[in-house]
Length: 119
Image (cartoon, rainbow, N blue to C red; front, top):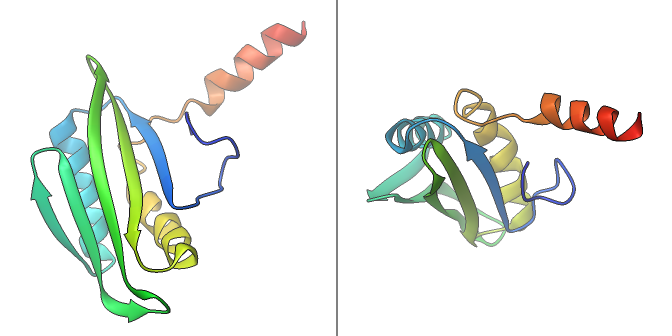
């Protein structure tokens, strides 16, 4: 991920980049959240997700926002606003698998740039 220091580590918030249109990203977020039985409330480019079941520290709540940083490049931020951090981590692992179509995976180009630096 572009902003996370350690790949795969999710704390109370995480971000990913996408080259898809904002409306496609929002639709995929809504679809992925509903498949995990989360309530979805949308307003412009902000989405609030809330779990139906109560966990260790109440119901998991997640605020999501889509930012356009350049034409055809968006940053999507997810923040835990309620509930347990471990539950957020588990939610994100399941949730992100439903977003594979919209997440811009730069890992291939990153490895190529590392190879060029070491030559």
